[in-house]
Length: 144
Image (cartoon, rainbow, N blue to C red):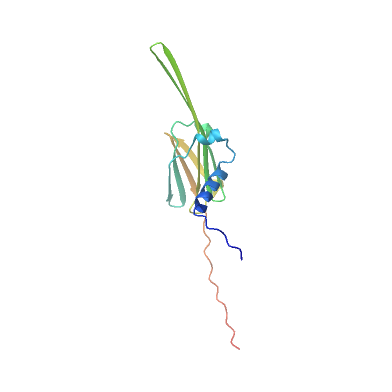
């Protein structure tokens, strides 16, 4: 049996590797501008609801997907601001990228999910899958 040297940073390295795999399609410049929006996730009767803060986002840039019990929300953000004053002119353009991937606590019907964007909050309603109850079966015991 081979001995593996102790590495106190193994868990931290795993966290960074997982994070890097989520954002592998982005360049380093894009990664510097990534924001993770805050989220509320709760159950409401027969559905799971996610409310995500996304102020200043153009609704057309929002992309929502549900795959393998993961909710993935992405959006591009661009903010333009112009200021004029005392003989100078200043224009500031800020752009960024919002991305949030969250594991869902229950299985949902992704094809029946619906989302709406209102007042800077994205609300996603996902119907829960019905769980099959295990049937109890009697097993006859033979006596020999």
